[in-house]
Length: 304
Image 1 (cartoon, helix red, strand yellow):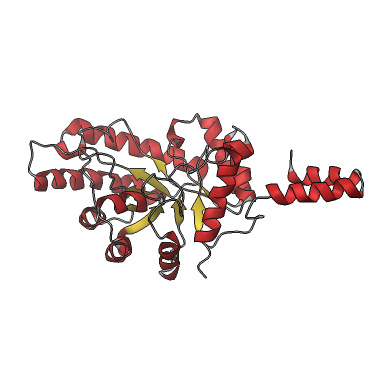
Image 2 (cartoon, helix red, strand yellow):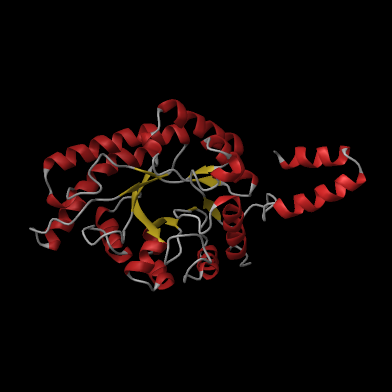
């Protein structure tokens, strides 16, 4: 039941019912009451399914009502065109930003670009072109890319050169559209080629394009290197997108060891106005867990 309908029904039931309804509404009210956050956090589908239902459009509306002004969807390219267009139209109507989606032609999670083989270059160019069509439907400005696994039979310098050479093929495709491919160093397993922000920084400098930048995922960087704020500063000129997840557990801020209030304050002080993707799970289940997640963001966002 909508909160507004609940209050209207309470008022019609008389003074005693109104009093009871007020108590109930206070107990179930979200922690935000629609106030826009200081930073542009982007939830993903499923994060508020207990509160908003299974439909992605209803979930986006719920996010907006809680004060979020962006939406992130890694699997956007796998949705059919009609659904992509519905999402894009709703985001435009609400004045919300589209966060990242993932560019993946099937090679992100295997040994691929590090080999320098033409088959992977060709597939990379093909999926980059396809990503432009998706981006236009939702007015996306950023898309995540992972250059695959190490090729253990090649020296690291040769692998790096192969990745740089392939990424340069994307620049003529992406630059005219304004779509930025953000490279994400990860901690999921030791076979992944991109591991640290400084490694990714070097690759971005070598590619030398406004369309190839860094996705600084705070969860992964805490696991791989720590030293979060100094590394943000060192790599700042190449960071275009930020993602969130506490450690351990990869849940919302305040659930682990990372001081997100300090990190958000630092990013705000540096003038970051981009999207911060909420790429994590919920620490607690059900509606209560979803309200607790919003409350955690309110607490961490309270840095001014």
